[in-house]
Image (cartoon, rainbow, N blue to C red; front, side):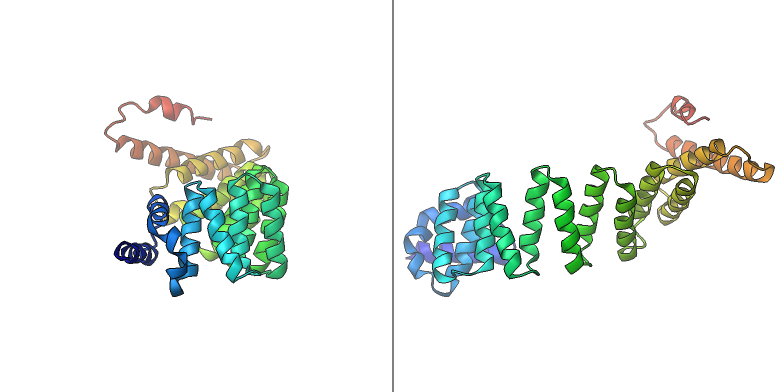
Length: 279
């Protein structure tokens, strides 16, 4: 009985510290918890859930199945237990069954973010990108402030080469984190990929903003150079003043890049790298 109590305390310690320690949790289950389920008392349900997740992490599907069965006996209509069951089928590569369970959960509770995210993750892993985009778009109609979801949606759109929608997602991210230089750089990259003078000018502005927020951002410097070069060569008619201004920008960027590389002691010769940037 002493070992059983110590094991329960250890499991509680893992939960309090937010440590999964999956292998050790399963070992504790096999050592003392499995044969004393009826003695868990008020901790029964939280321990069973903890062991179930640990078992799934360790691919101990039989252990997870036992835990889920015990939880269903107590909560036959629980959405939370259904999500655990879907995770069991997912671990066993029965993805269609997992998706079916998750859709049932979402029908019961449209605000169940855990079920929605797991469904999106499964669809993405199966290569069903368009389905994942559709589900993630529906998810964001409910959870509009989920920054990670906007980031994921932008990546999915980029994988489909849908740059305009990816740019829209990044705009939402910038609204949430306006001082994040990487988001401005990312948006500039997307606009650069779209092409066209209007997008190129917009991309340059965002590269400037990214560089302003973080003067050490070399990619933004390269972005300023490339967008300025494209704008200068793509316009058939360029007035003298605009051409001189653009050339000054190019000279300034090359000077900044050269200076930063020169500051790196392990780089002795950068002339070849700089030559690749010449128009």
